[in-house]
Image (cartoon, rainbow, N blue to C red; front, side, top):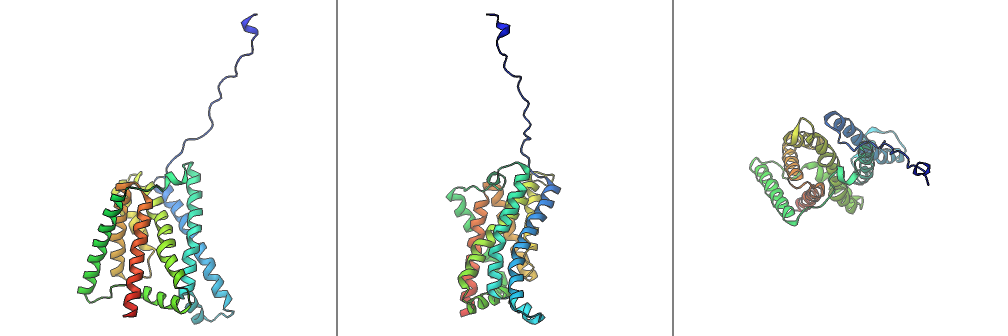
Length: 256
């Protein structure tokens, strides 16, 4: 049989799939705003619900509702799925798997112990400085919210919000998304740690300038461990431990 009469295989088709990418400085900044907007919307829906539910437009009453422990707890909790969804959209647009882009992988227990001890030393140093200056050890905002949540029977929701939801939301955004893109831009690792910590600190406007300093240094430490271990899960756990310790300390001081 003439070999020319045999069916020929089709020519190879060039792949149309685009390779994955990492957003650099401006892409990370713009998508970061998108993720922050998602957090804001998720929290604002809860706040709007409680304000509208009171049935009046009295400003003083609205401010009281917004600052109530139950409202704050539920708004922080609802902000978490909004952040996860927005981060998924941002990483989806980069064609990089969600888990890989945000470094959602665990590290060694040795790294965890080093991180926990380092964090305890840092926070303990700030507590000593606070006492030496005659300042409050914990922000007054936390004590007020804790008392309000206790009065509403929502203390358990506050613990979930502060110790689970907030660390996940904030670390996904700061040490997960912002650090990843900025560290691969011209900023490099040091610039990414600094700028992501600054952004994270700016999300804590309820604190005084003194606690701004503490939050910023904690952000630098978490950023360092994000770089050293390549694990955002580690920073989430360390952040959660810090918030848990702060909640227990606030509760103890409020009762003493």
